[in-house]
Length: 196
Image (tube, rainbow, N blue to C red; front, side, top):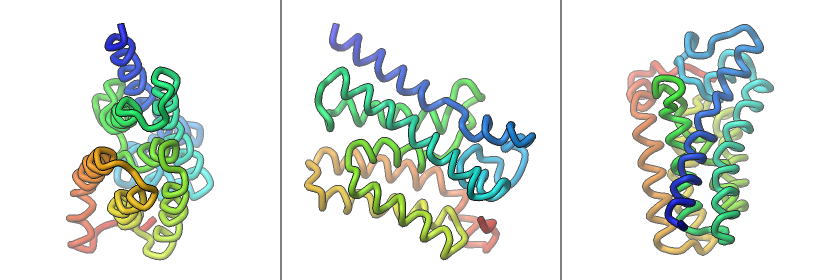
């Protein structure tokens, strides 16, 4: 029975992730976000095409998806940082990045992952959340900011005394984020990455 409940919670977490924040917000501005800029239905592309105010709304909505997933795991396990919390976090990110409702074409998981990590390590997440905006403003490249805070994440949670298995799980998340940003890295190398 416990395994069945865990499976249901993981599936629900995936579908939390599929909620099309960017598409819904952009459509209210009469814009199909997948047809402009990078075509990525995420906060960075919304900021680039509709401004910071609208993009921030998407950023927070994407964060909420994984935060809800982790919160759901808490309800089931009564343990803030259980393995199920991380599995639900990953499920939400996969739902965000590969939504079955949109032909598996989604965002890159940075804001979504940040929301889940905020539930697990609020202090580190608050610092990295703030750093993303500072770095984005300074470099005008959301990809540089996203990669920087992702790489910093395992160090931050180590400082907050995360267990070894949590650091390994977070390293897997970082590897996923880097893999999703490989096109951005190629564009950065060729000086073709658009400003935000």
